[in-house]
Image 1 (tube, rainbow, N blue to C red):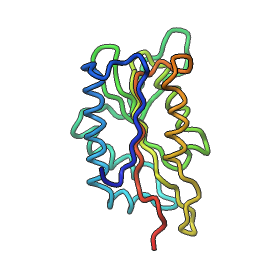
Image 2: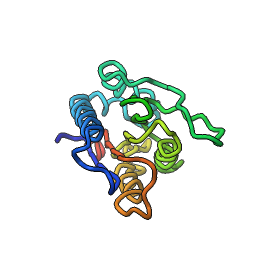
Image 3: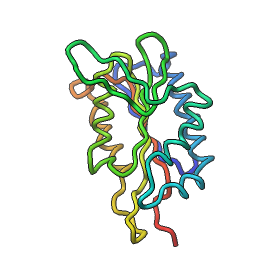
Length: 185
């Protein structure tokens, strides 16, 4: 594996050989390869003050253009909920099952976007899997890291897996870390 960080969490009741999980894991591996192959482009786009759309467009080159993920699709929610989540990307595996993919940047942990994303996946009856694409580090104007979201997000998402008492209605969550983790020399 290249520069892309990756953490994978699966519910305790999911069989690793399940065809749906195998398909999701295959898509995750394609995303890792894509992020690795675009590492230099990502580093140029992921600078202090840049828009998150710069990173989202690099991710979209694979998800939207090659893998047929829908972009900014309003997803159906369960009965009684009034919110209508609209993830960055959504992929339908089959009727009633899909992958919600979110690209985060500046507010990943400071504004709890990672927890909002897992909540969106949890409340959507059409979503069983989450791809969460977050920076290794966010940079201050000084060129130093002001926060390091990838490891923190991976730890926070892990809390929803591994023990049936804590598990939520998301079969798997995949956290991808992009961008450099050290300041430029």
